[in-house]
Image (cartoon, rainbow, N blue to C red; front, side, top):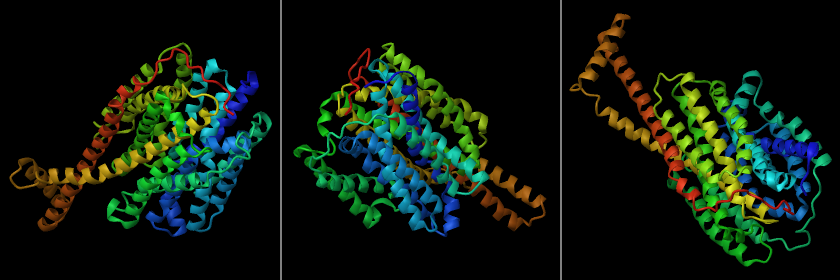
Length: 515
């Protein structure tokens, strides 16, 4: 039943706060990995499991969240997830070994998976159906801004304190969210209580999605199919997924209701959510790496660059909801959003080694506006035909696809950067020879410069060759990052036709009974 006045807004604040806990933690830890590595005496490959374990646990629970909310009551499940996440955050901060920290991060991921989709379902139920676009826009604030500001918050915390505080900051927020949940959110019926538990479905889901997420997270660092366990996990993910779909379609009490795929808008929405995740997480991955590895920016500087775009997203979100309420087709807004994202990628692909912070302001603002125009319309289009309990199931699947899209995006971009760097380096080295006047002029300039500083001709030549090699490496990286930006931009641009396969609706009225 819809709420009005103060209670509607306090519930909105509660669910957005809870979802931000999970979403910020998907990226905030990444900037602290080097410090954790040194503090706990671990290798970089081992420390990377802090992100992998969290992501795997998160993506396994996401599609189950609708079923869990139905079985235990959505308020109970939501509150339990907040409490467990808060406790896990405290345990992460107190961990004394990498093994403990990875275990508690996995616990965080399990609890976090119950926050996102459940938050969205509660928000949809709380707001009147005629304002559902505004509700989706408010939820989008956390979903889009969270991963963007995570590195900034992490960088700031590391500047003034140590890595445990990245986890400790969750504790007061979690306590506040738990209190507001107990006080203001209504209990819902336990519709699934007493029904048989689909244990085979849970096991197959964990195998399929867990294996796939692990392959995406670790594939590049393990040289993909050159590593036996990556091959084994890839086979397990394919077989597990096929068996899981068969199981859920044949059982009377599935944990994931695939019958909602009969709605064309939702089926296509799964694909567009995947693409949204590809663009959102892919761009957040490439930009910081580009700034820090090539331009020498600090994590805090890089995070601060992302803030203006995040502010634009925050300011735009309420207007997107109002536009939807006034009947502007979601397809039109999403088209503009995808085009703006392409413009952002095109502008960044033209960056140079002398690019400064002022050069990134406008592209990142354009990205922020584009993300606002993408998240709300795409989510609205996906869930517009769902009714009753289907909304909870659909929210879980939709959020899982966005997460998987992000994982695929990061894996694809990491592989592209690795392969294209070698390609561009080889192409550039073809011009490093004595028959190229540009090379001989640069080489002689370096030699004369070093000799003027007192070095011998022999040493000056060696140093000049090293300087040229460094220049080639940087230029190769610059061209590689340009390719990465183009890939992200083209994926979104080429996805525009999918929007027009979904139904046009002037006013998206979603039933609010999601029990």
